[in-house]
Image (cartoon, rainbow, N blue to C red):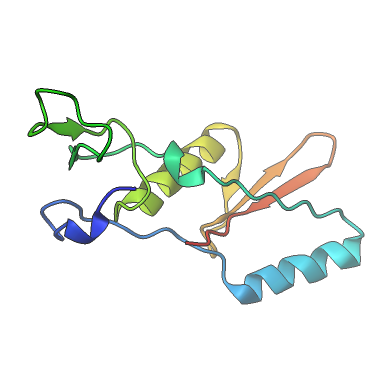
Length: 133
């Protein structure tokens, strides 16, 4: 885990938010699926935040017990986000948003964490994102 508490706004990061689904919208989705007798699937991804990419250069101290002998005073440059960074949720959201849009999903104009894909067969897939931090 990175020491995000040491990061300074506008120096180490700018945008840090991850959008979440409102509770009212979750209730509406559940009611709608019940009325249409649709199926609901829920998925929990434990390593979600490790799949974002950094937009800025971030350097961290070498973790204890992993220091390179003779180079203890050097720092490491991160290639991807790490738990504990302030921008981790935003980096993940940017990546998942790009994935859905690239694969034919349409983003809801009123709730930006809902993605819908309409199939030619008439099937509809609704994906709702909810991040628990």
